[in-house]
Every structure is written in C-alpha cells, then in structure tokens.
Image 1 (cartoon, rainbow, N blue to C red):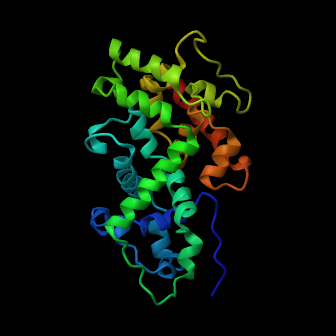
Image 2 (image 1 turned 30 degrees about the horizontal axis):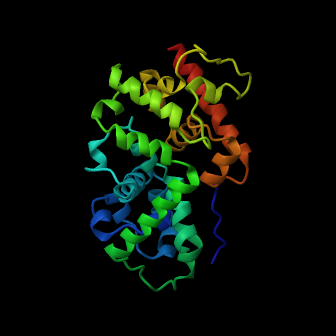
Image 3 (image 1 turned 180 degrees about the vertical axis):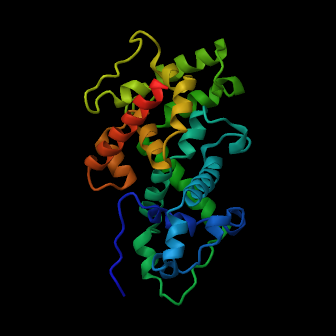
Length: 278
C-alpha cells in the first residue's frame, strides 16, 4: 500500500465531517452520499478522490456543516431564513473551524479514520450524539473566536433589514452598534484594505473616514467580485476581511505556513485588479 500524501488545501481534510453528518442530512447531499463509508475506498480510488476534490463536494459539506451548527447559535428559524449578510450566517460557513474543532473536541479527524479497520463500514452516529457534540463545538468556537459580542448585537436587533444590502437607517444603526461592540480579537477591514499589503499595496482605502464595516458588508462590488473566485480563495478573502493575519489563516485552513496563504492572496489581488478594470 503506497504512502498517502495530503496537501494542506485538500478537501480530504473535511472527510471526517462528511462521516459525522446524520443520515437524513447526508441523503440530501448527492455528492457526499455517493462516497463509500470506508475511508480507504475513497483515498485510494482516483474516481472517489476526483469527487472529493470537486466543487460539488466542497459546496455540499460547507452547506451541510452550516446546517448542523446554526441551531446551536440560539437563533430562531432556519439558516435559510437569513441572508449572506447576516453575521451568524457567515459564522456558520467557517468550515475549517468546524473541522478543526470536531477533531479537537472528539478526536474525530482524518487520522482517526485510518485507525478504523479497512473492512469495517463507518457507521452513522446517533442524532442525539451529533446534537450534543455540535452544541459543544459551537460553544467552544464562540468562546475561542470571540464571537459573543457580535451574537449579542444580532440577537438584540433581529429584523431582516439588518442583514440585507439596503441603505436603511435600521441597517446603519445595526452596523454602528456592531462596530462598537465587536470582539477585540478580530477586527474587520475593507476589501481594499485586506489586499493592500500584498505586493505593491496600490489599493489604498477609498475613503478613510467612511465606516469600514459598511464598506465590507454593504458593498455590492465586493459581493460580485467574490463570486469570481475559487471556493478556497473566497474563504481566504473572507478571513482577511475579518482581520485574520496570514499566519492565523494558515493555521485555520491547514497550510504549513503563511507563504501558501500569501501566494493565494497575490492571485486574489491580481483577479481584483483585472475585475476592477472591466
């Protein structure tokens, strides 16, 4: 049996999350459901690894993981009731955090999968166990990542307008309050600010006096530009927008060091320049 080599940005790192999904949820994800529940039949098969490295795999495990964690943030309704501008919605899609904390909390990581005998089919966990674990993971993430101030503000002002890209007084009030009570651990920056330290730094902030959260959340240009990127580049840019350093992003996303993140940010900056010139 050949030695398995896994790159730091491989979707394979999210395979433990796939095998942690409840049976009723994974049945709604055709790409994930097609994977054998024997890890070696996945990693030593070119056909299955092509599935794992596909955009469909990444999209489905991201959505499924978000669906699992959202109820534990304590907000009413379903995740789908909120838009991509809702801070809680964004937190639910922090896939690297959920993969990392699942392993940290339970030991259920890629290495653990290889301890399972090759002839043994990975069973489905019970719904009660999954609920209990996801509750612990979300609680841990809120504490470790410093998300509580943001959650408190979102819970206090839950109207839909807060999270839409509309220029309303209600939304402006929300953004101001979020700015003043946000976590001190991670501070958000503008799109231009997130990439200006890559290369020559030609993209300075357009208006230093304007509200930087509004520049990120409300700027339709950012939303449209982001859709041009590869999924992992979207993720890296989202972390930079939130104020994560290259070293922090490398740790969260599994890169060996920050140079891989810097390389991707250089590509993002090039794409940004090209998109801006259109």
